[in-house]
Length: 315
Image 1 (tube, rainbow, N blue to C red):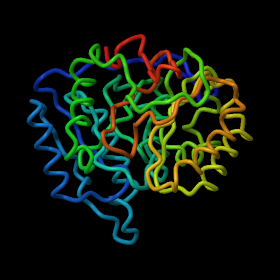
Image 2: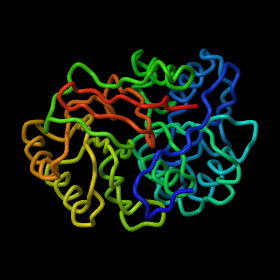
Image 3: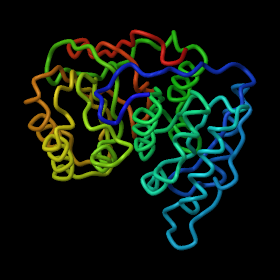
């Protein structure tokens, strides 16, 4: 197990999926649109997976409509899915907001005892990615969610997740043609990161690591204005969370204003780290949205615009 106070190390990789694998779908954050969930489940069945929807996935909080059911219910769904020995993977139904409210209600000791398995999600699931790394020492997949429109409608997004789940050795080289160096150079480290706002919100909490020293930082966000991006990055810098980071790859910034203005903020805050950085890496809240493994050793080549995994994302 890694401590929340340790820098990123290569984490335990769960086993790849096989045809017929049972996968549990959970909703740790916002409410799910039923028709979209059903369409996502059909895609999974088409991959010869056996999806099971946890009991509270279709709930909606009676008072706070931005939550999928009560905090305890959402935590229980995640824990029961993870601790079920017949389940090989746990997939998030959607993002939104709410993982922070339930992450402390999960029995992480019981989760650790259940052993490693695949976890997939992005956006608000960043909270859980950090918890899996800090508390279980487990690598995870920053990838599409079952009821997300991108997953339902974008073939490259589907193919990326499918390849990562079933044939991860075929997904060692990541990086779209759009990628461009922000700071040139090459760096080696272990992938870490996710949605910027959630990483910032996690600093100082029990399930977020205190440093990403030696890590290759993957960052993206959606719907945040430039000054808010500035504020979050400044908080991470002031907290020492970015001390010693090895490299930075920037994904999508949908709804964050004109990119040239945002780029000035990103460059101002991140370039002084003095490490290789690449932009337009095309992951996160965008289409296509490739699956990005977290907790895996890799080499970032900013000049070539590539991230090359040194081992497959799944064992």
